[in-house]
Length: 499
Image 1: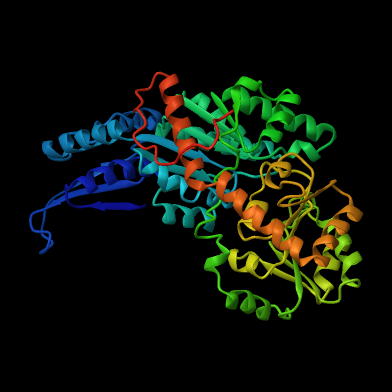
Image 2 (image 1 turned 90 degrees about the vertical axis):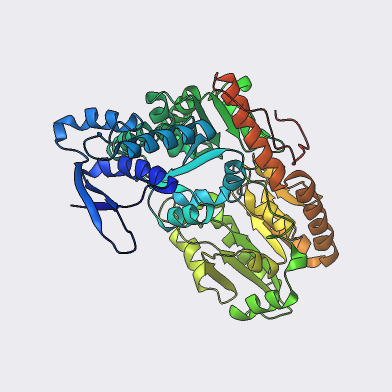
């Protein structure tokens, strides 16, 4: 049996104790509350034990009592002034902050909100995250200084596990009582919207980052369409990363046009082209070091791929195009960033081609991708479906031309003939031809790379997107009748109205 030992009655203790109580109630932990006369000497004046859940049959009743501010501590268990302090600090906390909860299926989606969370927090929001357990969840919570809650969810269609995840989400939201739930990814969106609707969350936002149904067929496609319709129907607001994907959503009958919006030019978080993805801040030694680490000669031409190594990313076309080009360009190397995933796996023969060639370098998952972009000359993205892909924007910020497929999402990330080249999806010959064009013309690589960086700086600045997201939250709070504050922060000028 877990025991929580609490001492001291300052504001941090009061707020922390209130939060910890809600967590403890789930597992029936008993809490020791004591007050010390002289903390330095460690003398204990009084010791009380409070049952967090005295009987399983009284669970719901007890949790309701916990959620009423201050009522879970009866006066007979602790001093009167402690009850008053808990009530006062809790009410003050709720009055000052708007609670926002992000929900996503897997934690590796959370880093896409790096910086955005802190920006919104600084404007009077308390932000928490819910995702499947994993190191990325813990790391994101520590870096962004927020609380994270692990609720196991799967990307696959697993009805029984999904029902269990829904119950856990419902219970967690019932505890947290957020004003806004912002759900991402198809499974996280579906379960998050249902759980938020059951809890009566005032503002529910579903964010479409891509549509798996675009590559699905048969009963799976029908099921995916149904889940997207439910998520959109239960949401008060539907956000989409790109206009082209929004057109698909509306055309498929998943959501009505007035309800779905694209903020500015799209993108979930923009790109930090000033610092993180700035080639001027990356020295020539970084390019040389990465190449040396993978046995790539300094005078080699490097084609790069960054992303999940799955079938939908076009790995079959990538391997086939590579086979066509490797003999024609003896100094050509392929550098791949990402890991093979069991969900939507690539064909064994495709994996064999990539793993057996000495001029194909599999770097796996990397913590800092900027250095690897610095080692590349061209970036390929032969994907079948996207929302608004981040990789072409990051590559463009690093002054790299991009060859991508002409599909929804990519058509807004790459300006054809200006910042890169778009080719038909699943067309190996077109992919090889476009790549060959850049391999033969270094000046064209430089021209398109410079144009790409200028475009990212003008249209996909992070601060502008963060401000647009924050203003969207404020707009929805006002429309839902929740007391909203007039915008006090307008440092980031919008380059284009939301649509």
